[in-house]
Image (cartoon, rainbow, N blue to C red; front, side, top):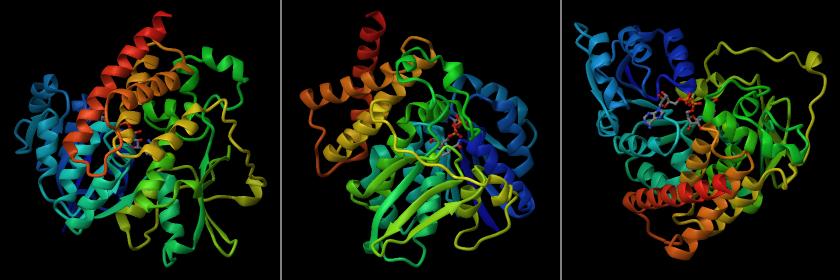
Length: 393
Ligand code: NAD
Ligand code: MG
């Protein structure tokens, strides 16, 4: 029986993963090792019972008593905290879903890779903060990383049987998020609720705001660079409001392979779950005559400073990805708390990168996990200072 673990089981990707596992037979077809969540212990316990997990772990330590209560008498182990999540990732499983949001996903993902096996990677922050280290760890332990981000799954599928040396360009599609049709001068006043009204995809709160600011696409450009080893100059971003083409690979003979489907993350989660096979998936089928038209437009760089900043991050490399992601997480926290304007998020990230470039060495060839976590920490401190200055101004 195939063994699985889901990190971030109670989130948007986690729920979609759970749905596919359940449809594929649930506890009768899979041996579930670990399920983890944040604070939603009721849901975590329900999932753990249904899949008869070995261990359920919540990130928030204050929730442990409630988790214990909910699983009493089931024989399912319980634990809490970041350390316990990392320990749960140290329990071997054949297939591991990495779907924690943010830099918190890095350590468990690294731990899982050390056991070989398959890591379905939704947590793009791992590749942004620690791309080379993650890829080296996978190679050293014979592990395979399967991208779950829809764009990267699309590219991965477009590359099956192809020689990467023949790739001329990667075209990442972006919906443009909730504010794509707003006049530029009104963006600074956008509220959390407005930025959360995503036109196509139902996702976690944080990635939905990142879609509106294009920080999500900026992370994905870096993710593309790190995962596929593609030269940054070959990576393009295009706004495709319908979100039906999930990304494209252009080859040196001029051919472009596009991956299409309904905007449903179960496409790419299911592909990673069944890889290298394709199994039927419960996703809507496209009626192309009904859709009739697909549209594209170039992103306006004045609206999306994140797309410029990610180029700088790829130029510096080293610890810049870690600093960039951490600063973005802090800026997003402040925006979600109504302490920072929508356009100020990019300003905070830019302040942080500029400051860290001046006070520390971001450009390093050999990087350890410790270096990355330290850069993450320092960037959070500097970004918090910048956000406070900007919100006081
Ligand atoms: P989400 O917020 O819905 O869920 C995140 C999960 O992580 C939850 O289980 C939450 O409890 C847990 N979590 C949050 N903070 C944690 C912490 N500090 N430590 C441990 N666990 C924590 O997020 P999501 O939308 O499912 O996204 C998960 C990841 O997948 C992100 O990296 C995101 O960028 C990526 N992703 C999501 C989508 C999507 O459609 N939702 C698409 C592509 C990529
Ligand atoms: Mg994506």
